[in-house]
Image 1 (cartoon, rainbow, N blue to C red):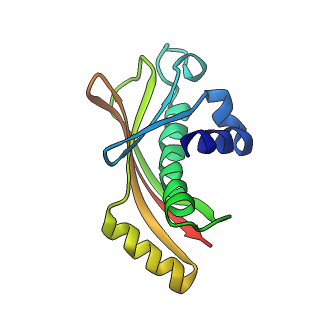
Image 2 (image 1 turned 45 degrees about the horizontal axis):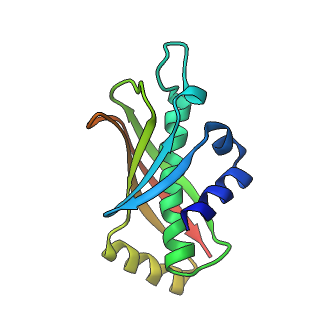
Length: 147
């Protein structure tokens, strides 16, 4: 499932391949996504804000994709972020490590009902880039899903 997601990202969103984004694992209720710092570095030798923003945005999108296409079984959906808020709290100096909180059972059920009845719905997803147990980037996005 994660290998298929990685292939999809790298094929359909070329920037993710260049950044070497890797949906690594699902741990508890979190999707863990990583990327090496080398192709994502800025002039200060820390994580480039554009790369950090891309990682949290695509990680949250990936959580939606895994839920809607893999778990709920809807295929060829349109998933797009329609609103987001990103806070940069500290520089990232090592591998980019992102934790995206997967939707709750209640959020999943609510989304399924909306998709079944209206053909569209939305999810609020949170992601964080963490380094040495410190939150460096906080992200919250609203994703719309259409079947």
